Image (tube, rainbow, N blue to C red; front, side, top):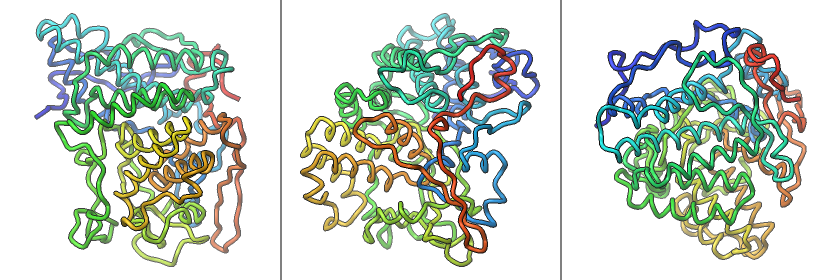
Length: 476
């Protein structure tokens, strides 16, 4: 059984005592991480702080969510700004949730990458494997950061679009950083994953740790976000095959069983379904997570347009409630709160791999192949009689692509995935960018609408970072 970092082994002092004038890396540990042996570096990979990312802006940004009073007023100011797609999220003295956790993780990954090969013990292969996990973990973290602060990848502009600083050292004394381009960051992510792949564990052996199948799934997703679907497909298919040989169960839950009268998600009680903890969730191949307690606070709902995507027999509807917690009248406008999961796994998930494969096949005009994969997922979510993709949709590429996106919404609504899809589809020639709207319902039933401006597809660089780097370019 893996152990977690303890203070006698590692000294990690968080950034709270470092002023913004010293370095833009104010979120990183002050002092040094003490690691000597190969096992010390492996313990760094088991650090729960790597698992608990803390970056959750995406859950407020998707167009599938809505809010009503009096719950909106109980949101933090940051959350209200996110929901209204405001430009400035933080004051100059505030830390950014979107950078604090990820940059702290990058510090740890860089420490491992740069030092583990010189560890005083361990075999060469053991040390290469640990380094490979850190490379892939760094890649996952940069993929998150570039999808906050860089424009969606577009081949014609990525080389000039500002991205995020590429940091490869674990040195808090460095105090000047410049933004790499979006293309440079994506190239960096791909290089890390391709370098890591040969030395990664061949099987998923622990959900907190990176494996070759999980890294293949991540690299496939990166290529999808770059609109390189032909390169993505074999990686995603190989990842799915790799999940079948995992040392821990990595597979889809069959909701026909889990929501049956004696199923493991039952009963649906006071707090919603008996949904598994992320550490035990069989649909997780690589665990990175953030907290989502909006269901218990009634501070975020999924709108009626999204709920209309579900057929009455879809078991995924069991994850929603039309009324507040613990009781009260129905939400306005037909909205529902998502009751589970309250801790969102968004590292590498099995359902998303199925949906990415279906998308790649549909884009390659392999409509039958895309339908087959979609129905493999859907037979684990709906009764057998309702699994089939409608014939008119299955035979039309554009309709089938839209069906894939609708299926993504049915699978992940209210969990933050939609925001990243909105971004990438905004530069996709196969889709037309709609007018994205958030609705805030007042207690008297009146509605205030907020429109997403195109420039807000990218978050502005936190002011604290800009103050520490006066020459750094901000987003519009």
